[in-house]
Length: 265
Image (cartoon, rainbow, N blue to C red; front, side, top):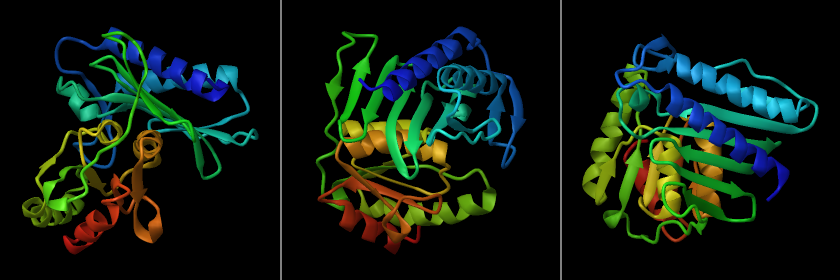
């Protein structure tokens, strides 16, 4: 295991324990909102990112750091960490067991390593560029299992995941596109965590994925895990972006991307 991956896994495991230890039995108190009144941040988001930042930069003080809840830090090493301390904060606040710690290390435009921890279910996903994607169930045997991605290539049989922006006007446009997509696929799911949607795609639990408005910390960690499992991620100009992310296996991606465009995403 390379040093970056070892550190990412260590930081993600520590953050997951931090969240579990501080998760109250009732509703979580919201510290602030961001893009809208429904785009929530809790004190646990903030303290969790601080923990990750201190742990990583304590071992690698010349690296850069981009986190969802804090100020970006530019470092001279060429390595930049991209972190979402709790991906799925709305689920977390409402006691829905679908939220994750997501961490990636990048060099330039390349993602070197990534870790996503499904906090509530004690499941870890990780990947290194060119070395495949792996799943570890720490509530079971703790043995790594390689991920192979989905097999479905027919769009009408695809189970598709998506998400919605927090800005009302954008959500309205997305709802129209989803309404057009729904009768042309097997079904659609909206779980509320992009990182876990992408790891579900990597596991083959989902067949395809489409979403708009993802930030780097939403996309990059789960994106590497999906890619290393054989999933193709694309978007405008052939690259996934905040404007649009489209994902499916290599044999089905062209048909699914065409369908997404026809539906108005």
